[in-house]
Image (cartoon, rainbow over all chains, first blue to last red; front, side, top):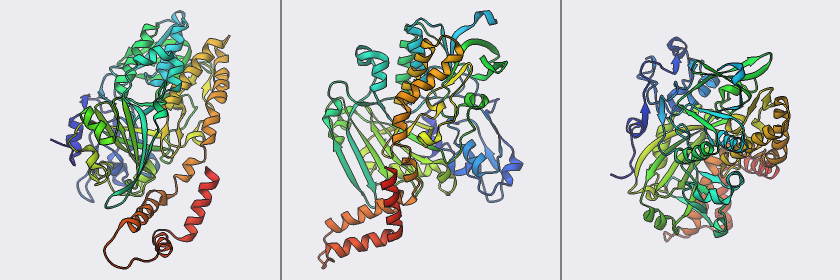
Length: 101
Length: 427
């Protein structure tokens, strides 16, 4: 198999994660997100963890697969409706573990 | 831990800045604990990149440097202006860059940071991994320690080396949260490719490396693509300004995939296999983005947490400055007679060794905010090359007329003049 266009799910599948299923380190307030016109998180998250099915559907977020970069917080708080109400790193040992970096 | 069991120094963050400080301090006999949230140092770090070795050399000396897990000594510096159908590449090769102690190496952070952590441990530093520092502790206006997963630890000096998002510097009131103008987001695929294939594809001898910058691949956002050759892999990625990213509608993931499959990029990767997908924020403002104050009584901020980056346009330097700032804080601690003296002495070291270089490049980010740099100008360059090399049997316009037409097709004369003026005054 050679290099090809890949889905984000495939790309995240290469990574080593220690998933903290129960404690999301990032939390969104869906009511605030619903009123957000730009929704910059949808394009800015490199792992595409913020999603919206249709124009009027709610924004959903999954913290598993997070690369812990912080981009979502920055764009949300600068261009969005501040729907990200908590942003922290995962508890020690949890989250992404880059093997190459 | 009670107040009596106070350490000399607590360092939060096992990246290059924190590890450099830990190494120097431990070697000098200080009681140092470094706390890293990853399972090993470097696990949470990534680079699109290369390390300029001067500060690492100063930290380790030539003998230990020779043992360091560095990938390839960079001798080829390439820039590709990408067009829809191909691209124009500048290729600068300079073998003096690898003479004696080479000027820069590509590195893998997970590998390199872990190695450096081992050296700091051998020197006597205590490295605690897998613990996230939740907050700094204050007493009578002085920072006295940290709270890490419920355990309180005290020290004369706390060093915040917790990276670009630095919640410690924010909690200490030294910095506001990042704005989207000041940070870019870097996304990267690690692509494995046999060593000999990389050598022949890029025209390299064993141990030599190439870097390439791609302009015109960022959907008009301030930023570009990068490629670094590692020993048997390529680091391929994009860095785009987060404000620009949030203001358009294409997913970063899509931009990255389109970049990877571009006809000017793909042949370099062909046959390779992606093995990791990473992302990280990059401070882009350099000197202008530095916080007013980088210390408080009992706390010093270093590395990315302090915003030590130089945006040269063709590259962003940060890792060398991180090491430099780690050395600077360690020296300050060793020189200071009281802990209150540490901050001011650190600033003296920084003002002397780091700030002057940052000032030279302080206007570059302004130049990089000109949107035409990322669409019209790369296209213009390619259109000119197209005129020079395309032959289809018809009678071509004269050179001067053709060139003027190409310029006019891409930018207005006013923009050209104003961008040129900005260029002259910024550089």
